[in-house]
Length: 252
Image (cartoon, rainbow, N blue to C red; front, side, top):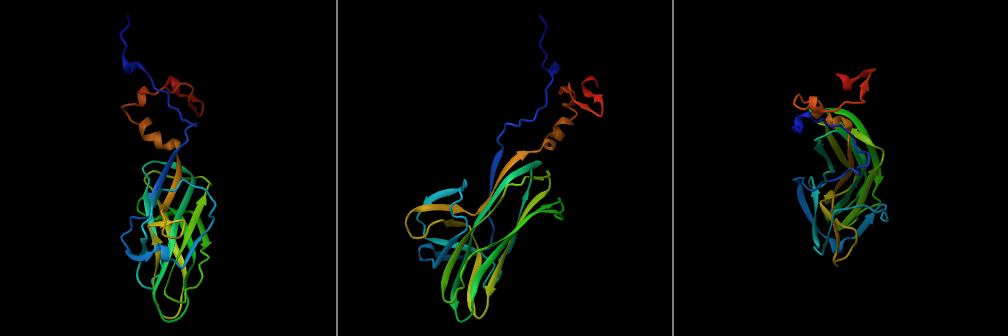
C-alpha cells in the first residue's frame, strides 16, 4: 500500500461565481466633531427622499428623544471626507449611502437659513492619498424650507447606485459630503450629519438608524494573486488546462 503524502496533491484554483458576495456597512458616526443636541419629538420639519425604498438598514427600536448633529461650528457649512482603506481588490456591485441632514437654529434675528442640497462624491485614492479617479458624483435637493425662527429641521438623504466599480487593494475609497446652504442675516445655526436618526417623527418607540454606507462587494480575481505567486505554494497549484499565449502551464 502506497503511503499517502499530502505534498503530492495539487490544488485547483477556482472563482466561485455563485457566491453572493459580502455586505459591508461603514458608519459615519466615528467623526469627532461637536454635537448639537435637538429634541426629536419637537422637530419643526422631517423630510425624506424616496421614503418607500427598501434597504437593509442598521436598526434598533428606541424612544430616545435627545439626538445630536455633528457640526463644524456656528454658521459653518458642513464639508467632510471619509476614507476607507481597502484590504483586498473587490468590485462594488451596489452602494447605498443614507444619512440624516440636521439644521438647528438656536437663536434668530433675521434672514433665511436652510440646507438646500447635498453633494456626494466617491473617489479612489492612491496609497499616498492622491486622487486616482472620480467614481461617481451626485447632487440631491433636501426639500428643506427656509428657517425664519428658532427651529430644528431634518432631511433624510439617500444616495445609491448599482453600476459596478473596482477598488484596488491598498487604495482608499473616499466619500466626500458637501452641504449647499442658505445662511443670510443674523442667527446662531448648526448644520451637519446626525449619527443616529429615526424615519418617523414623535416620541413613541420607533426604528433608530445609523448614518452610514452599505457596500455589496465581490472579490476581484486579482485579490488572490499574492497567494498564487507565493513560492511556498506555487508548486502545489494544479494549472492543468490553464494556458497563456499558447503555453500550456500544466507541463511547466
